[in-house]
Amino acid sequence: MKLFAVIALAAGALALSAASTPAGAAPASLTGFNCISSCAAYEATINQYFTDVAHDSGLGTNVYSTLAQYSTPSTTIAYDVTFDAATNTYVDGNPYPATKCHDDFDKYCVTDKQLQTEIANVIAKKHWPTNTTTALYFIFTPANVGVCDGAGYARDGLACTTNVFCAYHWYTDSFIYGVEPDNAAVSDGACNTGQTPAGSDADATLSTVSHEQSEAITDPYGDGWTSEDHETFMGIPNAFFGSENGDLCAWNFGAPLGTTLDGQQYNQVINGHDYFLQQEYSNADGGCVQYAGGTATNFKPHDPFYSGTGPLVYHDGFVMPSNTIYAIYWVPAKPVNNRPPTIAGIAKVGNRLKAFHGSWSNLPILTYRWLRCSAAGTSCRSIKGATASTHRLVAADAGHRLKIRITAKNIAGRASATSAATPKVKR
Image 1 (tube, helix red, strand yellow):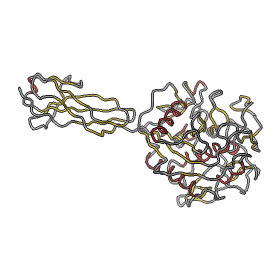
Image 2 (cartoon, helix red, strand yellow; image 1 turned 90 degrees about the horizontal axis):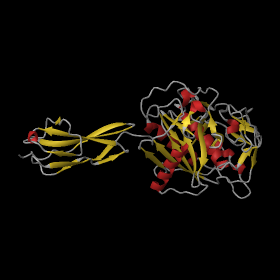
Image 3 (cartoon, one colour; image 1 turned 90 degrees about the vertical axis):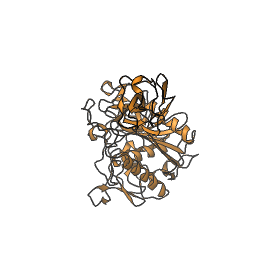
Image 4 (tube, helix red, strand yellow; image 1 turned 45 degrees about the horizontal axis):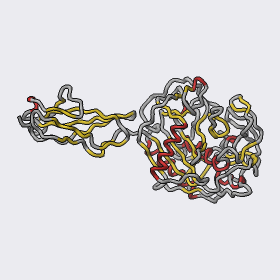
């Protein structure tokens, strides 16, 4: 599904399943930016998935094998995916910017524009490519973070993770991208397949990743391969865009190939690993399939915002001939002290000491607290009212050593670091 600001959403966002929770649902239990259980495990599972998809490039055994049929007179689409977890990933622990959007469910929210800015910043930092139809940027956000098209509230009709979509793909003047919230946590399960064959909370997200990646390859700019039915979207006549290959088979999975040892269904085996992914529409097979040449199911879109039918028709635009994947994990982390604070100045009554906060990661807000310690530099206690970056030594400081404690705080948590002690303060 693709994001369109004009009517909030149209043919490029994967809408909520039929089990969608209405906007205005009670907030989830807030336990921090935790990707449900572990962000490290979440990221590792997604990286493994992209590695597997790249490894099996060119094979006809999974949903990506359906894409080559949507080549154009000038561009041949190949199942040719490249991914290197060592060089093509970036984890950003910086906090989210202030925003005026809210999905009526999560504590925090980011807008599409803010996500575009984040992707652009990471691209610049990592020197990743732009202005190409072979690079696809995925940005992942964790639990307790909603995503909305713009400023406003879901209850007022703004398109958000709770009332419209589970994920989407779109583009800027410089890059093509996909937005992937933590689907195991979106709108009380509306974006969750219920199957976890990969053994991680990332399974729910992977189902939408394959959907958006396939659509971005065949229709990156909205003028590639889409259906011609032009029916309705959210009750609004959609005069410009038909459904994409993923939309026509949204929330269709076909018959499972088997179950894992713990009873989880899977319908794809990619590089020896089991996954449960949505089917893709195949013109050649006349319906939704798990791989090119597979048995087409009687597809009926479960996506409540679309009622399109095949086949897909080429609309004279661009497609992506190959796919190099870049994964950005924007998971705010609590502050980290990289270099401890220090104190400058002569330790003598009447002089002024100056504190330097050291170096911190993850853009915290810093506060200062001067400590008066024993002559040995132990048994430190806060000095009342001494919360500035400087401190004028007074008679009560004589014979003591002083330290500065810096407390750093952001939306993900707080941390403190304390300087070494000054020499004993002289009178």
